[in-house]
Every structure is written in structure tokens, then in C-alpha cells.
Image (tube, rainbow, N blue to C red; front, side, top):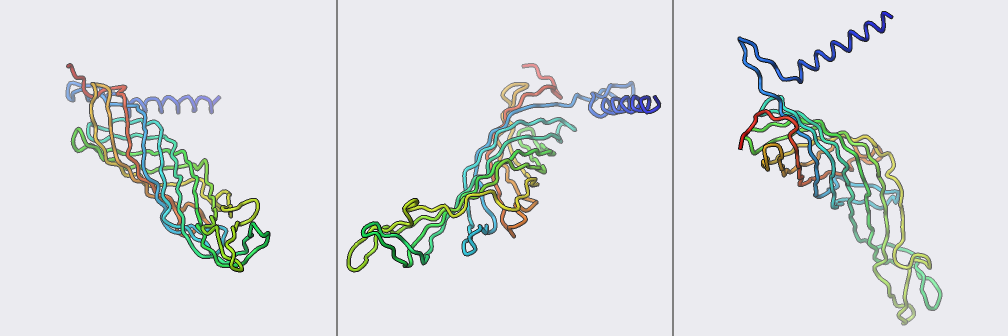
Length: 274
């Protein structure tokens, strides 16, 4: 009974504190009533580029991949509320893709099959090595936002992401399909099952940190469609704080996005009459 009584007291205190922190401040004879805190809810859509930093070392010991890039999207929701008319706090929740691709060419000594007559030849041939990263994440970003003027805002947040997909695929493509053997031009292939392209690796990225943290600086503009509806284009760049994989020294995936937000004010700090 004593524990239950203490728990009830604790809940009552929390409710009182919550009312004092987030409720509208009532006026007194000595202090006028504070304006209400604006509260907005919206949706996010973004497009942009994914950029590899560092070098990725696949299972192939003599192979290395760098400078991967790719197209990425963001879709999600955002909530924001006033501290005052210039400083707000909020959070965004979205799904993001970090898919990227890179390639390089090199000469390799390999045994290749000749179609006719059926035989093989061991020589140095040119290959294109292709590395593809397939990465998806769900990200939560609590943030602070500063609006020095009504139409401009600056935002800084810390993103916490859970990876939903973290795969890497390495393929090798034969670039020379004809050769001369004993004065005769012959067709050459990797093997009967993979004539031109061979999959070297197709697996999850080893040692992946499934929980990632990033810095999320943003600059954007605020356009008022109506008293309660706002359109906000912005630019954001994601800076990784944690390593992508414990087995990769300096590999990571960065991103930039052009973001579009559409927000509805659930509560207004000022009531306008058109």
C-alpha cells in the first residue's frame, strides 16, 4: 500500500511538472500572460547523393574499393515545438537509403575457357571489378532549431540510426572476349555458368555497427502557405560519428539531401486574421 501511495504521488508530481513545462503560462496582475508555444507536425521527403569516405576492403585480399556514390531517398515525419519564437526543439523519424556503387579496372592473370575448340588458356586479361553497397536505415533525429529571421532556419541534430540492410556485392567482369591462339581468333569466357561476369562476394558487411550515430546540420527556408500550413525546403548533410564496421579502418557512408517538408501547425503562437 505504501509503494502504491508513493507511486500515485510520483505520477501527480510528473503531471504538475509537465503542465508547468509545456502548458501555456497564465497571466498574473504583475506579469502578463505568455503567448502559446507553437506546435507543428509534418511529413518529409528528400533526394540526394550518397558518398563513400575511406577505403572498403572486401573478402578478396588484393581488392579495394573507394569513391562509391549513389542516389538516396528519405521519407518520414517531423514534430517541432517552440521554446520561444526563435528557438524550437523537435524530432524527425524517417527511412533512408545509402545505396552506393563504385568500380575499377585492372589486369589479372587467370585461366579462361575457349569456346571452340574446347580448351583453356592462362593469360593476363583486363577485368572490371564492381562494388555495390545496399544499405537502408531507420533514423531518429532529435534537434534544436534557430530562426534568426522568419523565413530562414538553422538546425542541428544528432541522428541515431538502426540499419535494416547492410549488404555488399563484388562482381568481376571480363572486358576482353576475343583472343588469338595459334594464329586463330577464339572466343573466351570465364566459365560455362558465368561467361562474362562472376560474383566474387555477395554477403552482409562483416562487423557492421547496426546502431549508427551522425551529426545532422541543416539550413532551410520557411514559406507560409496559409496561417497553419508551411512549406520548408532545406539542405542537410550527414556526418558519421561512429564507424560503419569494426572490421573496416576508415570506411563510412556520408549523404547529403535536398529536403522538402510540409508542416501543419497544431497550435499557433500568434493568431492572424486575413
